[in-house]
Structure formats: structure tokens, C-alpha cells
Image (cartoon, rainbow, N blue to C red):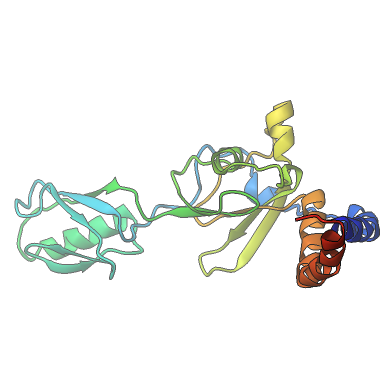
Amino acid sequence: MMHRTLIATLLMALVLPAWACSAPPFYTDYDVFLPEPRPLVGGKPYTIEPPDGIQIIAPGAPDLHNVGATLRPDGYVTLYPLGEVFAAGKTPTQLAAEIEEQSLQYYEDVQVQVKVTNFASKRFYMHGETSAGPRPYTGRDTVLDAVLSAGLPRTSWPERVVVLRPNEEGELIARMTVNVRDMTEKGDLRFNAVLEEGDIIFVPTNRIAQVGIFVQNLISPVDPAIRAVSTPARVSAGMP
């Protein structure tokens, strides 16, 4: 044990000064995340995707009126008498216009509305030193909501939380660094942006925890050798 402690102490003495001088960069695309006036909800039009649920409102079409459906994994819904209708990637207004046009083959003077009854397809994502994974997107999720819901362990770095925003093609278009500790301890919510569907929040590991992980990774490969060296001393001393 003394051998391991000594080696760990020496490694930390070598690594800690260099690590203390390094830090992740600040990202400053604040104008993308924090436009003026500040939005109350996410800015993207809602597009229907699996497994969202919808309801058709069409008083002039008895077979369609108040019919509910859940988008299948292939993006289609089955609506009598229209058959297979591809709904994925369309706004409720766009889908209503398409159903209305097709309905004119069977009914006269049809007006159609589409209501989303189950908002199940949209996500934002948490990653890093927190409870990682996808989270349901509600349209009113903020950075603070997301981080506090996922949790901040002692190994996290709340002063350097990064928010990433990809576009619809999956390409990174903006990123910003926010200080969540200031939000919770000082009430400074200037950078508490409303998230959009698909945003990614990354919580980095703090510097002390990084050093501990680094040292542990260095010690692990040689740990069997350290144990082998220390075993004779333990035996000669009559220790178990």
C-alpha cells in the first residue's frame, strides 16, 4: 500500500501543476442560443415523426373525423378510405393539407385539421459527467432545467458546461459555454437558453477528478507489479 501511495503522490506532483494551468476553451456563439427578444419556447416548427400520435379533425369526412393514429416506424399512418399516408417530417398543417387534398376524391367541401396528441419523437441529449442519455423535449426546456434534472456529481465541472447545436443535417453550427454554478448560486440566468430539439449538453469532468482518473490509469497497468513487490515485505512482517 505504501508503494502505491508513494507512486500516486509522485505522479500527482508531476501532473497537477500542468493540469491546473489547462482548461477547456470557452465557446461564445451566444447570439445563436440567446437571440433578442428572448424566446419562451424552442424556435423550430414541430414536425411529426414516429412514434408521435395524431388525431384527424374533419367534420365533412365521417370516416376520417376524430380518427387517431400513431406513426409507424416507417413514417406512415393508415387512414380509411385514403390508405397509406406518409406523415413523417411534415408539420400538422402540411399533413392536414395533404389529407384534405386526397379526401376530395371521396367527399365534397372537406376541411381538415391535424392535432398532435402524443409528442413522443423529439429529444435533446445529456453527456459527460452527469446522467447521460436522451431526454424528452417539451419545447420549454432550458439549460438549467436539463442540467439539474440530470444531476451534477462532485466530479463535474458546472462552470464549464457546453451546449452544442447541430442543424437538421447533423452538422455542428453553434456552441456556447455556460456557468451553471452562477445560475444556481447567484441567480444569474442571462445564459439560461431555451433548448431546441436535438441540442446536446456536455458536462465536463473537473480538473481534480481528471488528475485522479489520469493517475489511476497510469497505476493500473503496473499495479500487479507493485503488489508483487510489496507482498514479501508483508509476509516477513507477519502481516496477512
